[in-house]
Amino acid sequence: MSRIQAPPDEAQGNLTDRLLAGLPAEAVLIDPDVTASYANDMASFCPSGAPAVVVLPRTVEQVQHVMRTATELRVPVVPQGARTGLSGAANASEGCIVLSLTKMDRILEINPVDRIAVVEPGVINAALSRAVNEHGLYYPPDPSSWEMCTIGGNIGTASGGLCCVKYGVTAEYVLGLDVVLADGRLMSTGRRTAKGVAGYDMTRLFVGSEGSLGIVVRAVLALKPQPPQQLVLAAEFASAAAACDAVCRIMKTEGRGALPQKGGGGRRAGGHVPSLLELMDRTTVKAVNDLAHMGLPETTEALLLVAFDTPDPAADLAAVGALCEAAGATQVVPADDAAESEMLLQGRRLSLTALEAVKGTTMIDDVCVPRSRLGEMLDGIEQIAGKYQLTIGVCAHAGDGNTHPTVCFDAGDADESRRARESFDEIMALGLRLGGTITGEHGVGVLKKEWLAREIGPVGVEMQRAVKQVFDPLGILNPGKLF
Ligand SMILES: Cc1cc2nc3c(=O)[nH]c(=O)nc-3n(C[C@H](O)[C@H](O)[C@H](O)COP(=O)(O)OP(=O)(O)OC[C@H]3O[C@@H](n4cnc5c(N)ncnc54)[C@H](O)[C@@H]3O)c2cc1C
Image 1 (cartoon, rainbow, N blue to C red):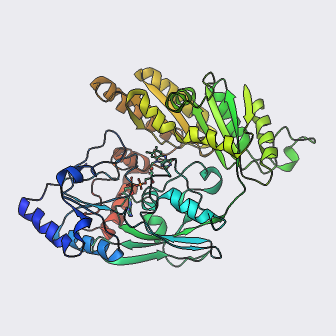
Image 2 (image 1 turned 60 degrees about the horizontal axis):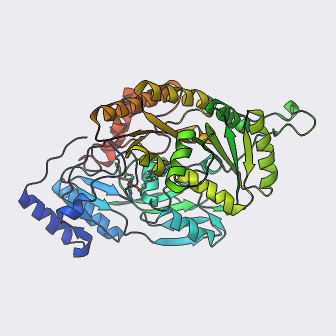
Image 3 (image 1 turned 45 degrees about the vertical axis):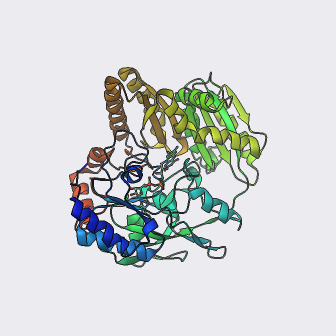
């Protein structure tokens, strides 16, 4: 990470005074004990610096004032949501202004005819979800951190979640944005209409840009009609390979002529469209049981959770259950009702937190491979865990091929920490070899900077740097991230 020198004391005073000219006193935090608590997101191994000041604006004008001040004084700015990020993308740089958007947390509009919501960036994902449900609407992107993370952070990292296998990721739901640029100007991108192709897709450019191009201060989000309550099925497998085979069978489409005359043995022309298709390996299942005493089956090597939110989920689960059995499932247990379904999902959502409790620290990989290569990915991860003598638990958005191999280690043990970092890198190399990407949804941040260059190549990096230069010629927006 590039280290930016802390400003001298008189410059610090000047910075605070200038910020206070456009912000109320309670929105400008300078107590070092308090500002230090804004230094990191939730990623391990990512360097961070001490912020000079933390600002908590409540209006667009206040954000503009912060950016104008930063431009005039050449001070770096690090935008932050809830700091649940897993790549160091929200980590402070030395002497920066931390621009926390958490106080801009109003839902400005929910429109059931246009099927959109207009929100400020600090709205918590789950709060939006519940609010739109009241109108019979649904905001699908649902990271497991949904009770904590913000829409601004979701846009910054292009978040995914459990239901993305059917409904897609954050990028598919952001229709338009208001963005405060590095020099304080306000730019609107996109639209609130169902369609629109006027000019370059600047909205999409900002999704996943990790706070490096501008500050999102308002977002127009697409909504779906609320689907029926989903029902979940749990399938146990004696090997990860068999579970991955089941994933392929579930997702594979068939031409109508290819199906046998009666029933199709769980197969369906056009393939199945589960509303989630998740995997937890034995390490993860045990970690969740140890943390939350959920009674998940620990003898199984891999547990698949499949759900449908169709008009007849029980019929779809029965068909998919047959496919799991054909792939070698040792047990297939459909949930009785919505409450039992939610309990199973709760176990999945706890996976990363539970794995952290195994040895105190984790490094969470986010490699996404074509789902047809998922079995090879899991096999390779097992070999890497053996090679480095480490516990690596795997939970995965299996239907998307998006794995979270989570390296559990003791940060106080230098040798184990070194092995953890090396295995983390080797997992990314494996993902690239299998035609995948180093990050499906957590972003690059600081943690995977050198790997971004490996994935997109020198020309790709050059073009991305050129885009950054247009939006941020002084390099003050979240410096040291991505490249
Ligand atoms: C237990 C746990 C489970 C998780 N599960 C998932 C999961 O299932 N799927 C998933 O995708 N992620 C998951 N995450 C990662 C994380 O929650 C997401 O990346 C989330 O989108 C981050 O939101 P945040 O509000 O915490 O943003 P932060 O971490 O604060 O910021 C993330 C990035 O966005 C930028 N940013 C924030 N707000 C703005 C803004 N207004 N304008 C411009 N840039 C901004 C920041 O600079 C940073 O680069 C999980 C994390 C945890 C701890």
